[in-house]
Image (tube, rainbow, N blue to C red; front, side):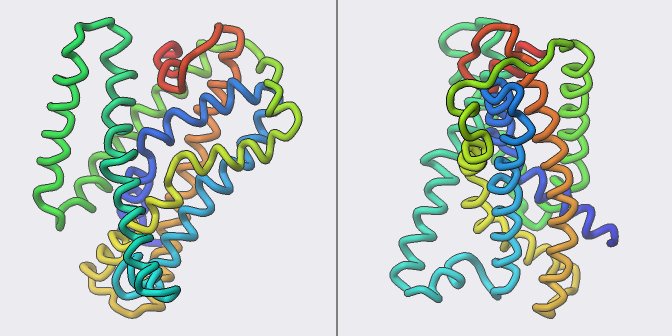
Length: 264
């Protein structure tokens, strides 16, 4: 394990930890209640395990997800990768990233009707600025953005653990009958298993830029970074999900953003 593994592992953590990763664990927690630990185990398999497997799979190919999908059939590769990029981009991922940020930071203050437009405008301007130099994205995210993100998440978690003393409530009907399977399904909703097919090549290129070109070495280094990412995601999911589990006595909430905003 070296410095590059840590930086790239942090970068991958930040890429994975988007809007869905923040809002689904608290919802799972509040719905699973006393069945939380069984439910979060299923969530981790699809929300952490599958994405890391996908990144590892991409590290075996020379280019991107298209090359991997072409092994089935070139037409399948074209359609599949198009759907992947549309799903994690303009159809679902991009709008969700902006709206969740708005719901947690601005909406609780009951601002005017134009606040969402103003927020998303500034949000995407910042994203555009970060994206202007792709070669620096790894360092910008791994060295600066991820530590800041972890600091904010840690503050949220610590605050939640100190402020919430209530025990978890009763699980709802779905989690009472089959908590593991429902958690397993919820993990898919983060969309990380799909996004990993796009993120994987970023990891591969990051190691190539650092002078590693052997396929075997890239796979090995990717696994090391993936381990760091996985540990971070499991710790954060488990913590914010537990906050949700302890929020059952505080009424009903529309989504995970509302739960965390209330906690703050």
